[in-house]
Amino acid sequence: MKNFDNRWKDFPDYIIGITKEIWEDRGLATLNHYYSKDIPVRSPMGITIGNQDVIASSMATVHEFPDRELFGEDVIWSGTPDTQLLSSHRIITTGTHTRDGLFGKATGKQFKVRVIADCAAKDNTIFDEWLIRDYGGIVRQLGMKPKAFTRKLIASEGGAKNCTKPFTPAIDVQGDYQGRGNDNPWGKKYASIITRLMDKEFSLIKQEYDRAVQTEYAGAVSGISYDSVDGFWLGLRSSFPDATFTIHHQIGMDDGMLPPRAALRWSLDGTHKGWGSFGKPSGVEVHVMGLCHAEFGPFGEAGTSIRRECALYDEIAIWKQILMQTQD
Image (tube, rainbow, N blue to C red; front, side, top):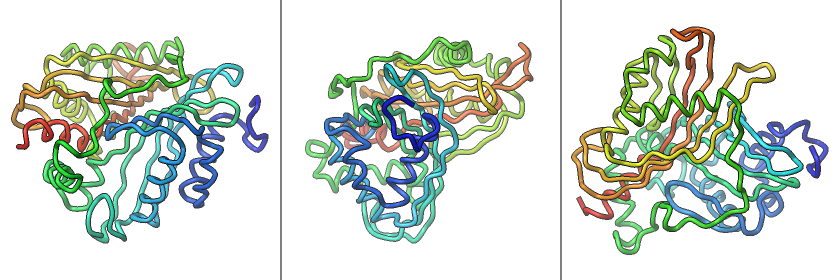
């Protein structure tokens, strides 16, 4: 790894290793050199600039969930150390709501959710990031409903006019990462499948997904087989039937001891005008940031199929956009 600390054997080892060092081993000060001083970190809940904001938010999370653990499930990556590297890092994170914080009064309840973080790195430093935590899954496991939690969150932040604004393209900044991923055929295949689903071609689910597909979706929803896939993607698309779907980044990989797999970063921009995963249509404009991973196997009508899928958006950020505009 050119210009990276020689204790890392490869890029996935670097990503998994610094994640543990920062958040589990309490090495929050290491963010001063692992994250660049002016790094833009985009999540559905907003955008921050600089490693000091990352340190502050990390301390707040560790305080609220002091036993939080992060288990690296996979790193799907592209690029080269000579140019720029991009990791799409899928994590299982767990914790106990021991102290008061963002999620309200301590409940003593535990959570287990997925996180996907797309991090651009060069010369031993993360300099651009896109991050989705399954806040809806955390809220549900702490005994609350996402819409009601979001209404209270807006109020606690001073109301719709004063609260922290969720991420939209209008508030984005130009980061230093200019890549779009790679041209590996598995990334192309997954991009084609999700694009066709967003074009409302839901009949392809039984063609492209394994009958025993294992799924992990936003809201900490685990499932198996076709109904799980249909419920997630159709529920999202039917909420925003006229939204524009865009793939911003795609990676495919087929090496090492793992099956072929792919990672996508995408968005939906449009009107909440349909019944679906977000209830009664509100008619307001919404931006959905999405990240998803897939693993492929040998079964299926075409000789291959998606055997595992993890797809995330942030329910809380979507509800926040809806409630800020409707006060419903």
